[in-house]
Each structure stands twice: as structure tokens, then as C-alpha cells.
Amino acid sequence: MKTSEYSSSKIHVASETASLKRLLIHSPDRGLGKVVPSKAQDWLFEDIVHLDTMRKSEYDYYVKLLLYFLDPEKIKGKLKKVDGDPTRSFYIPGTPGYFNSDRVIDIQQLLGEILEIENVRVKLTAAICGIEKCSYHTQEELHSFDPYELAKIFISGSYSDKRMLFAPLPNLIFMRDIGIVINDHILLNKPAKTARTRESILAQFVFFYHPMFAHIKHNILEIPDNDRHFLLPDDEKVSDHHKCTLEGGDVMMVSPNHLLIGCSERTSVYAAQQAMKLLFDKDILEKITLIKIPKKRDYMHIDTIFTQVKKNIWVLLSSLARVGDESRKKDVLHFFAPKENNQEFKILQFLKGHEQQPKEIENLEDLLADISRTDLHCEKDVKFIYSGNNEFPYGEREQWTDSCNLLAVKDGVVIGYDRNDKTLEAFKNEGFLIISAKDLIQKFENDELSPETLINTFITLPSAELSRARGGSHCMSMPILRE
Image (cartoon, rainbow, N blue to C red; front, top):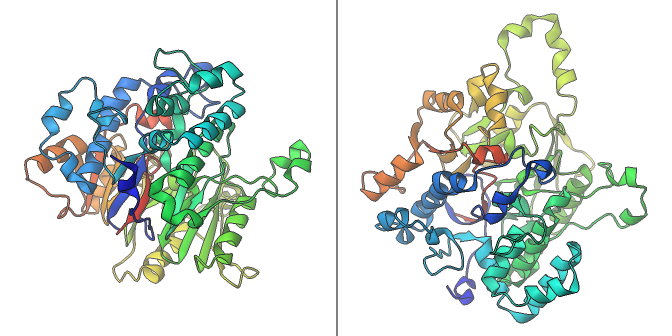
């Protein structure tokens, strides 16, 4: 595909559940197979994963599903050929067999395309070599590679002959975190962890240099750092009042005028404040709600504790919500436990022009119900589906494996992991069809079912390896156009 074919691409997201039309993804690359146990946690993984299983048995289904919903011409009628190719060239950007869709877009493809531009190649190579402290000879060697191989090196940290040059970027499969589309603007992230610094630089170059985003270059937003950050003592630099870190998993565009920003382990209060000021000053939004959650690895981002399924349906973790074990509510301990357990949980809502008088919202259900009723004008009853079917200890167990982290491809049709049995049971109780990605793809191929007519469906992805990477289908997508 020529880069000029992207030039008229529309960028617009004003909802979490409207039909998905275009998104960015990144398929697991060779760098994921080089994560070692001693560095796994530094690179934000809980464990090492088996790359071939993650690719062939799990993530490839995600790609095929997205193509059937967003760009069926790229996959319909080609399933036998795609599944029968041991090289997997269909999934690999830069290869002759690559599916090359302008609706389901791998950032590695975009990176390869901008590296064909000589001055971009020089600038980006210098930037990467600078932060990775490469030698002059390494920098010269990198200039000898073709653009698509260079894109693989920058992402995987290794040459095709398996030599490692620098650390891999195993978290790039979680595309949500590099940025978020807010109406027709893109807010770029500021990663909290050093392991994701290179991701941020690659994203900057793609968004500012690729023709796909040329028409909205002035709509790409970056949060400014604290002007005096470099003067602060080291212990103050990590304070929520001074550090400026924000990741896309903490940002949700729930309606055209309402944005949610989580303050979490990865997104600081300072960054949330700066983002709010920027968005209000540019008159992009009328309402921003900040949701402060405990700084725990269990939660990480707000999209690990709740996501929207349908205009009137949300999935969430009950321990950070209002609903709990009814039998304990009559016990004296009930009056003390919630405050103690949720002392870091707080919701404040800000309106443009009235930032000094925020409204405090007591619990998550009240906020989400108000979004459905007030912002989305939903007349149906608002319903909540709880992780683990709100049964102890399954709520927390299944939240850890991303039961609340779902991607809506259209209103009421979501993709999630197959391993969260109790959560799936809760969806089934609400009238949802539970179907595996493999079975659904085959039914699409045989014209037994159609993406256009599918309603109230939970599509399950195989997830033995993907779930160990600590991110779900919501994390693995960056929607750039919804209907």
C-alpha cells in the first residue's frame, strides 16, 4: 500500500461502543520471544511467554476477527490459504503476503513507511541511538537496513540474525497506551516506565510524519512537562504533584463531550490536571471526570477495572464499586472496611469554566449510570456485569486476567478472554451469546452469521499466553475511527 492511500483517512472517536471503523494494533514481534526472567518485571511482564503460541493460537484470531468486522475483503474467502501458510506472512508487515489493510493497521507498517523518507530515517535513528546509548558504528550499521527491517529492529531490539541490540518493546502489543483519539484530536501519552520510552518516541514520529495523520497534525496534543522538573529533588520527581506521566489505558472517550481520565499507578494527578487544562483551553470537551484508583499492579489502568459493553451495559470489578457481599453489610466491620480498603479511590467531575467547583461522585456505578443516561441519552435500564459474577474469590482472580478489559467492536459486541468462566457466566445470564473466535470466524466464512447483524455477543479469544502479558483486548487496540 502506498502511503498516499492513507492521506484522506478520517480520525474521530467520540464513544467507547459505536461501530469500530479503523484502529491501530501491533502483532507480537520477535522481541517478545526474547524477554528473560531476570528482566521480565523491569519490562512490565509478569512472566516470559511462548511467542509461537501467543501468535498462532491466540493473537492471530484477534487480527482475523478485526478484519471480518472492519475490512472483510482482506480475509473473506482466504481463510484456508491464510491458516495453511506456516510462514504467517499474512500477519507480518513488510512481507509480500501481508494483509495490508487501511482499517486494521499495524503500527510497524506505518513505521516502515515513514522510514522510507530519508530525513525521517536519519532523525529517528539518531533519536533511538541516543536514548539507547548506541555506538557510532551501530548507528552507521542501522542505516544499511531496508526500512521495514529497520522498523522491526527498532521495535524488537534485535537484528534478524537474532543478535540483540537493545531491550525489546514487549508492551507495544498494548497499543492503547501510546495515545488516545478524543473527537478529532490525538492525545499522545507520556509513559510512566522507562521500559516504554522508546515506544513513545516511535509513536511521536509515526503521528507527526506519516501521511495518514498529516491533515490533523495541528490536532496532535502533547502534555507539557513541569517546567521546573529538572530542578526537583529525585524524591519529589516521583510525587503525584510533580511527575507528568499518562498512558492511554487511563483515558476513555465515553461521549462527544465527556472524557474519563484515571489517576493510577501509571497516570499521575499532575498529568491528568495538565491534560484537562489543555483539552478545556482548546475547547475540545465540556466535561472531564478524574477517577483516582489505588496504585496497585492489580489495577494498573482504569480499563483494567471497567469497560463499556453497550450504551447501557458496563463490566466492572465490584470491590471498587458499590456492590459487595450483602451478608457483610450488616456486620459492624462493614462500616470500617470500605473506607480502609478504598481510601485511594475517588471520583471528581470537572466542567469547563467551573474547574474550581468539582462535583464528587460517590461510586463507580453512579458515574457509569449517569454517562449512559445523561451523556448517551439511553432510555433503557443501565446494567452492570461484575467480574467473576461478583463471587468470591473469582472477581479478583478474573480481573487479574482482564475480565473487565473488553473491546467493543460495535454496540453490544465485545472481544474478551476465554479463561474468565464466571464473568462469561454473568454475560450469559444477561442474554449474551458466548462464542469462541474460532467458531465465529468459521460461521462468518460460511455465511451462517454476519458481523452486520450480530448483537449481544461476547467473542472469546484463546488467552493462555496473552493473559500472562497483563493486558486484554481493550489494551491491544487504539481506535482511531468509530462510527
